[in-house]
Amino acid sequence: MTTATLAGSCPECETDLTVPPMVPGETLSCPECMLTLRVEDVTNGKVTLQMVEVQLRDWGQ
Ligand SMILES: [Zn+2]
Image 1 (cartoon, rainbow, N blue to C red):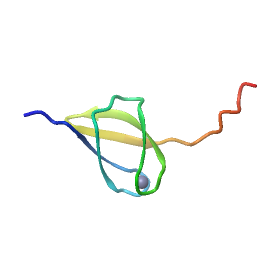
Image 2 (image 1 turned 60 degrees about the horizontal axis):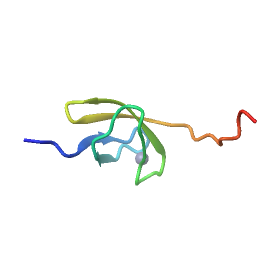
Image 3 (image 1 turned 90 degrees about the horizontal axis):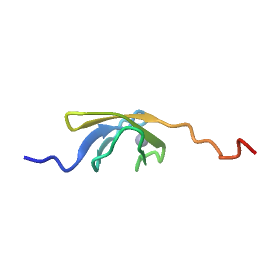
């Protein structure tokens, strides 16, 4: 049996999310609260998500 999706939940609004296979470091947006979430870990078909503080890319110049 192959798991085609991963399960996780939004750390902000606790919505259960089903996401395509991802690797740590990838990001997605929560469809409920629109926060940007980063994949921290993938274990046994479950993803651990952490919210990412959105920063304007204006640093460095
Ligand atoms: Zn959310």
